[in-house]
Image (tube, rainbow, N blue to C red; front, side, top):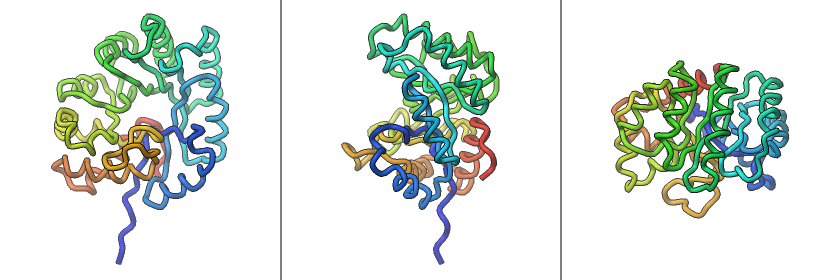
Length: 262
């Protein structure tokens, strides 16, 4: 007698992206077939927010956020901050994200200003934030500490990679750590060690679809259904039972994004 797959949530996927325009329904169905019952989809620029809203209206088993991602810094204009506040007012359950800092992108000072503005909006509305980082964790931590403090469930560090000490710094700030495809790679020793040791209460699962492919599927479009591979990799790293991990991860994600019990 076959068992039903464990209920999981993909806490970070870009299902509104054009990469899914030709088969979005099939991608969602494939994920639901393996137990993924909810999708958390962040916004990255003002121009994409209406597309994100359309996705949410079609797929109610989703949570959405609005943010100005550093990757698109050249597209953002000052008026986008007012637009962000407007969209967040319209959608009181929406989070702020994906926002953050990226050392690979020019205009770092402009990134910092925009990031601080978005954190201040999140703090004013008491919304959780979803953070992007690329060799910028220290600057992110300073800003978060100064603006958000350490309120419980204040946000998610998307695509965590780093040391145990870095992971604990975020945990102590009330943040969750996004566990993605990186842990399926044996060479990611530092990150795998950190994820194996931090409190289970700090972890949630994500794919970052269509990006961040899992081991063995490099060069292919990533999909939410692959979160089952990440879950299995996590179970191999942790001492808890698979059932305990699944239950706690689900609880962590539901609490962070105010998702009703599935």
